[in-house]
Image (cartoon, rainbow, N blue to C red; front, side, top):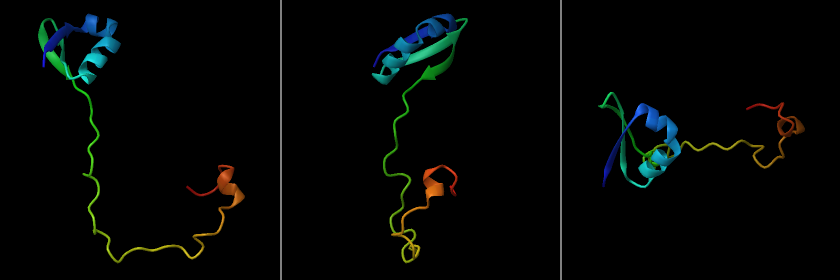
Amino acid sequence: MSTRTVNIHEAKTHLSELLAMAMEGEEVIIAKANKPMVKLVPIMPQKGKNRVFGMHRGEVWISEDFDEPLPDEFWMGNGPG
């Protein structure tokens, strides 16, 4: 993995290119007066960290009108939610 350090002006001018480089795995550091300030890194989705299987076991509830069509107000943007 290579590292590229750029000053703020260059980062503003070439932001799209720098983002593409970071997404490809290259380390991009933005500096001010040759002093590193921030590092561009891609945000990767975290899989499987939000769910805890069995957490609400036995607590399932379904409304009695589950299969009923939603009211027209809902489809027109005036309903709850």
